[in-house]
Image (cartoon, rainbow, N blue to C red; front, side):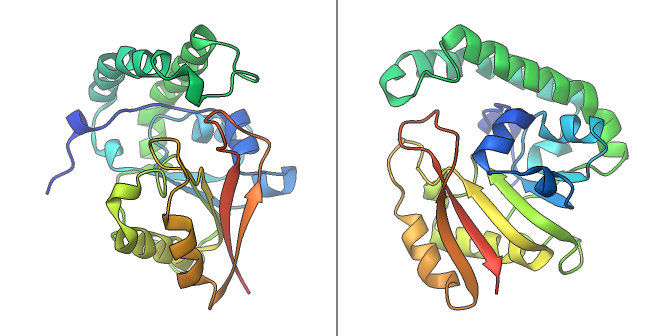
Length: 226
């Protein structure tokens, strides 16, 4: 089935959030990073401005800047309204209120849009749909990230996740997934199953991080090579 933009809800996060979600140290930022399901995040743009190396992977990158801009405009009010209706599911400390949330997200997405066309030319934004195999050689990257994609969309199923993580582990020495909740902000059943599958060949841990916007969403799954 073809990937359709009308079915996506683009919602972007920034470098500061990535640093806290994934416990990214200064040393980590100097690694070769590939990030899956980045959508309209400004992570790649901000890292590029710091002369760091990031490749972002997402099927929405098949569309034009204008298409993405229109889709962001179409869905922004829907996401904000859903958040207003579920205020109790979020922790309003680092982000104080709905207005600040909207400002942070729109700023990140605007930076992404301004960078998008140039980033595609530089092969920093690559159209690719998981769990299909990427074109990268084994262990091209030091670190692979997945923000608000894998595990969060638990309805994609266990086999999808195993295949996706296997591909991430093929191209990177270490992977980090955040959050490990599902879309209902509940603990997903997937991490336990994924741990059982991968712990035979890898070092698999769940780590607390200094980021919590969804309540109890302050943990990431880490899988490293032995």
